[in-house]
Amino acid sequence: MLFNLGAIAIERQEWRGALDYLGRSLAHSAPSDSMTRKLFALIARAHQMLGDTGAALRACAEGLSSHPEDAELWFRCAVVHRHRGESAQAEACWRRILSLHRPERYCSLDEGIYGHITRRNLAVLTAERGDRAAAARLWRAVLAECPGDREALTHLERLAPEQRIEGNGTA
Image 1: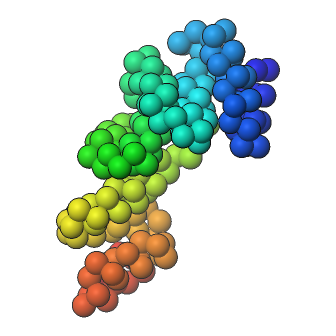
Image 2: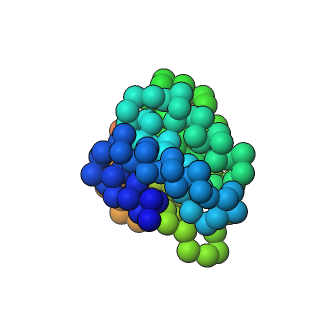
């Protein structure tokens, strides 16, 4: 029940209330419980939204210590690093996600994290550091997963305006 109340508080953007419910739920959870990794991700998000990026990263680290293959925790960690201006750390987290296998059983996260969502974030980072070729490769990978994606097409056009980009990702 505490988990559900915490998740509702997150949806309502009641960050402090969410931390109370989720913290109490975590205190009664074992590392092997199916919801424990989600608890850490939600706790990290609440801390991030309250501006406590240190606590957010600690929550991610604690969750990853028991669940090192959890893509949602790696993604949350990347987002926090990105907001802190720590691009190299964010990139390392997003690249770690791309090395993980998608779970074979149900998990309560957007499975795009294992592909196009992470690649979008990496493409922006690589473009910002001036690696246009790597950014274009990442945007093409997004198009391979999401044919006709307008955002990917727009970015590819900006990266290579002299090339005509087709909806299937080829130039």
